[in-house]
Image (cartoon, rainbow, N blue to C red; front, side, top):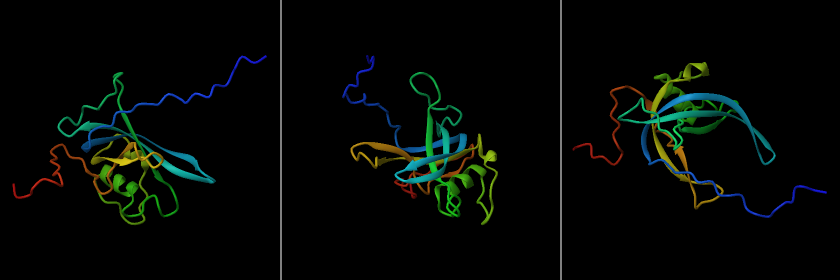
Amino acid sequence: MSFFTPVAEPAPERTYELLPTGYYVFKLVDLKQTQKVFGSDEVQQLEWDFSLAPLDEPTRSLRKGDGTIRIFRQWTPIKEGVMLRVGSLAHEWISALLGRTLQIGETPDLDDLLDQKMVAELAHIPNQRDKTKMNEKIKLGSAQVYTKKRRVVDDDEDDDA
């Protein structure tokens, strides 16, 4: 006798409200190495957990409806010569979090990055599996050193104004 009867019902759709696009203060709250399987490939990656705050209130982390801090998670690959390749997301983020450009061949202590802040642009991109949905990503090339007196110039803003 079975107490479990499989039902062919779809799982309830999870709802997720996207943040508005634009610049935010990103504070690194956790960083760990993970493994994921994509098809037949096992991929090593860094999992970055950031809290986000508005530029005009950089100490006020954005929160979810239940009052907990909203975590923004991103991943970057770990492969020989790829993790810190100049122009990669990891290289860009590490440089911005440390407040200086990494030297070629330099391997930073990743623990030094925790609780550091950077300014970056949050963008919406189409989901790879379902093009009708959007994902949040840090726009490549947008990460900047965080300073308390920072004014980010929007790309659409007229410099002559």
